[in-house]
Image (cartoon, rainbow, N blue to C red):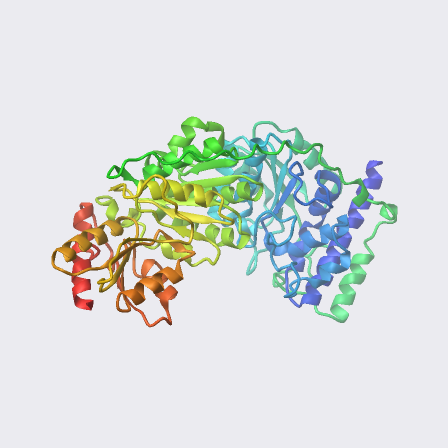
Length: 619
């Protein structure tokens, strides 16, 4: 097609995207039409003239991918799909309806959306994972990410900038829509494009600065980005917020504000329709969308995972067993990928790296981009296992929240949990991680106590649908299960029981062994208790806990190396609520300090002696 005709057709397409974005937000009575208008030219060129994708095949493994990091521009994305024939243009008018999947910000309920966005600063992190996945499956697909200038204040954006350059992701092209206005005021650098260009160049990216409303410049920038080798590209696009509607153009106070029905809407639509270019009419851009060049080879079917190989009584930390299991899983399934935040020799993920270096990604001390890129990898078919100290995963709490909304199969592992880590002190002690992960409704939360259960649960979480979290411990604990023991997610293990049990004690991880010590001490004095290993906190075996509680006089004691809120005690209380069972909670109730693990268990109230005292007080 002649370049002038193409530019005219794309200009008209961009105008239609503006019209549909304005109409949709007005119909919804809410949304962000002005941020859609600023990026319409960039998106029209990308979807209709640059990306290789198939509107009839959303999950084509070789198709170029797009992540809308500035998720509040969702109407623009939906309008682009309408323009491409994915759905009728009229469907965009169902924006934000309860019965429509065209939500206020994109989620993977929609087949062309890989990860949920809208919490700003996350899209580029996810795009890294999507770009890494192209390498994993040996595909030439490219990943595009549209950011807003306001979200550039987020630190996670610059974590992503570093990692993308370090990985040399020349298949990643990001576009920053510099419209100069945020929600409440002008953005930090307004329209000073040089500020953005210098920063991205300083991070090692290839940078291209353009007028984001000049269609020729946009097409040239996308073409130039395809030629770049060895590093990612950032297109810095100067735009006008509210472009095309004169009473919103560059005006503050329009963020998140729909144009009113009636005269205001009519005036906006009339102004936009007047911008249509006659030379661009009648051109079928949707029919000219380039399709993916090839479909990557399907992954090899997984092999059985090698079983644990321990002897009863072996002293092995669950964090070490995690590393062993991860390496075994990697040998069985080529989709497994490991990510690290510069603690691989503490989480033992280095055991995976030594065997599968091409599937191991070091994110250094950047937990947000680690989790975000894992989301992108999972969305494109990988089974990613990011791991670090459990305490440091709290830095990525917002990514965990969006991971849950996306419902992507990221398998997180957090080591060095609780006061049992010892001398490192409270800054390193995760005492709220179980609460953080349990707060999300669709994350499996696992807490193995010995090496066998850790290995079995690593394999189980790999194939569990959706996200999962495993808490591992620093101290070595004895192996108490046989290598053929099964650990279904959602189960529990009753380790000690008799008809004379006066109370059920529920522990997990290191506190399970304190409960077993308490059992021996009480048994010597003639008191019998039931001991449960609650290795799965979410989902939880509600029936098993109620049965145990009823069999022991309606009394349960929980003991956990965690703060009281949101951990084992809350999980058990919620499970047995309404069953007439009393739950007493033993937990860490003060900010801890440095000390030897056994000293800290005693000092902060979760040792065997404290369990014994609680049983005697309750029974």
